[in-house]
Length: 334
Image (cartoon, rainbow, N blue to C red; front, top):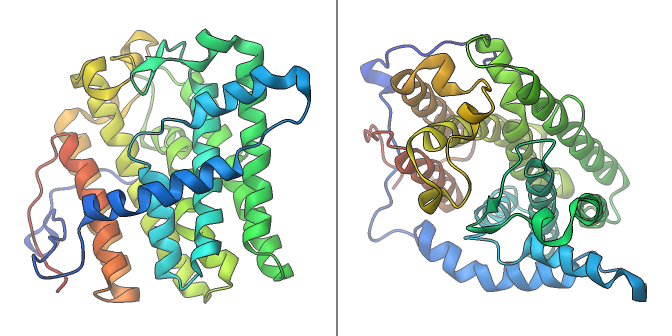
């Protein structure tokens, strides 16, 4: 894998001090305003794109699919996929298909994560996990239906561009598959707390990193954007994804279900490795902040002070701040 698999946290130098881009009051809208503006359009596209069975006896499957996707929190992932698509120059219709595919993949993974054989979780988004409402069988089938629909939407996003469609579907398969989300989840199940090194932790983090990479690159691949644009977005996505998983580990350790919407201390309950058990809380915070700082620099180097760069950097900063990572402003995009 490309992302600093064996890197250890190091003290930040003054020149690359942990920071987050701040949004100038006179500049383009900030992240909350963007999420509020795009939420209705994203939800409408998701509802229109749901994988709905026409079979009369499959009514409960359709209900389970809808339960998995609605309500969907702030829709951060599809919104950021839309931002990244805009940054790569993809048309809005193309970006919306990519955004829906990303959310369906994410929802599919959450349903599987919560199953008794996986995390055995009772809560998701502050309500009962899907398998507790519809049963494990329908939960698995709903997850597969969402996964299949995601691939269909990605192929449609690059319709008419045969090479782009092939590259996008291949990238999605890689990100989801044995060396991506699936492999990362397998490592998570098998790695015990106290036995993980940096390499094992990085492999486990693929369960989050791989989807974040796809979120950032799918619009660029669908459009057939320059390779360097896709690489810069991939680099940011990998760093943001790993920082996101580290922050999730920190929240799992420190917060209750009211704050996270899912059971607390899942890693400790299953004696699984986490960033906290491997690096310690402070080491995990430093590493997450450094990853975001490096990802921000990569975007600015490639795309300059664009509105979309500012929104992506702000999103990463919000994730860090929620986990108690202190943000030092070392730069500003005007």
